[in-house]
Amino acid sequence: MGPLELDALIDRVVAEETAALRESFLGGAEFAVTGMESPRQRLLHRLECTVVEPHLDRRAQWTDARRARLGADLRYRPALPTLMTREAARRLPSVRSCKVCWPNIHGRDPVPLRTLRASGLRDTHAGRILSTEAGESLGAIARVSARTGPDLFGRPADAIEVVTSSRVFAYAPTEHVYLWNLPTDAAVIERKTRLFQRLGSDLAPAG
Ligand SMILES: [Zn+2]
Image (cartoon, rainbow, N blue to C red; front, side):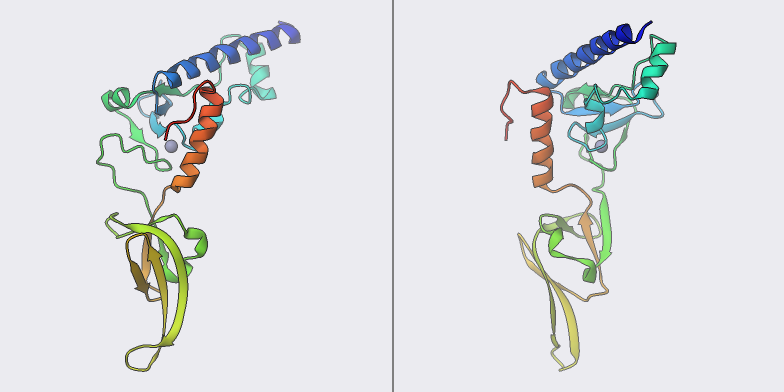
């Protein structure tokens, strides 16, 4: 097959795959499974997961190496995630859940946590969910500040003050604190908007 015919084949594959993704998305798909063919590798993601996003750009899948592979085997196709609705994802008999996007399809998966010392908290953590060690939310972080001054007994004491949407917490700098290791709402909204632009451009993003 000549290079022009190869280009035409790739164009057709990209168009077909993109149409199929769009159809699933417009049909209400909110989740994606990678490695669907192999029960051992199957991994469930939220559709806006950063791991899935590059796979949705079907044109970008065609690197020179993959193009060469297609030239050698016309049946070759780059891996395509399987999009599905929440109901369909719940019915999957065996699937592991992605640790990056926490699909939590059955509502029983523990929230992935990040542990750090209170002194490591910064204003850049604003919007993140402060958590107990067990994963219970203590509110979204609004502000972090270091406080220096004497304690009740006049001894010098440093504290890290964390203001969340629900309360104010004071930690010793070396104390462990826990954050939900998940993207902020703002980051998720940004990704969902990109997803709509890619797959559902006829629709306006829903809240
Ligand atoms: Zn994921």
